[in-house]
Length: 300
Image (cartoon, rainbow, N blue to C red):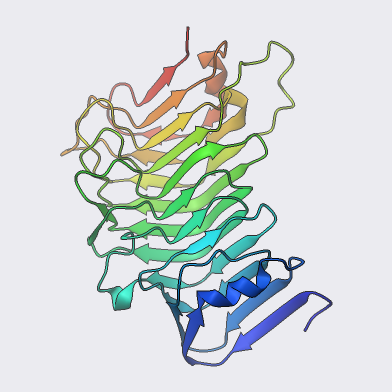
């Protein structure tokens, strides 16, 4: 024990079962901080019934984690789940890692850092991370490759946020999403961010507005997207220009065999926003060979 309500647990090499029912005892907890660290070649098998993690701040470091048919669920705004330097897979790598989402973040924080996820081109039908209104989604030093969505799927393959709030933060840094298959539907892609409710852009000085979505020093490349104009690698719906920052990143998925007339990035701005304000928010980025890599829409 490090201090009151803060714990570090060191685990020797071996194989362990992690029954998700254990989180039932944290449903009324006072947000203990628990860091679980593997000291050798340690495997965790997730078992039991589906269970939200409760009121807890928990991290797993240096484990191989077999999710089986389960996923981690975060329902509390102050709760947090972190996987660092872990190998994440399902049923001994015999099942698509995205047959279910790895995490469903209804509220709270979810962090992936120094993770390499290789889907082996097995077809699943869920985004790796599904979120409604998160406090924080953070990807750092993340590699995602060979993930495949079934052809009829209408969800993005990496991250789907459906009701982002103005208090939310999404940061994606040093992340490489490469050689994945995003399905054949217009609504399939890689990253989709939609706000809970759209607001009108303010006419006041907005220089103090902080970004809610930050993508930096990352690449989303060589992913197979639907070869139709409605599809895109990234969709952002409802954020003001100043709430978006994409810098020093490469988004290039429109090389053959993809359709060179389709978009890489689609942004739907709130009413009265100025598309030109996005110019300073897209810094030092590289896009595919399509003539119009970025599409911007503003309601009349």
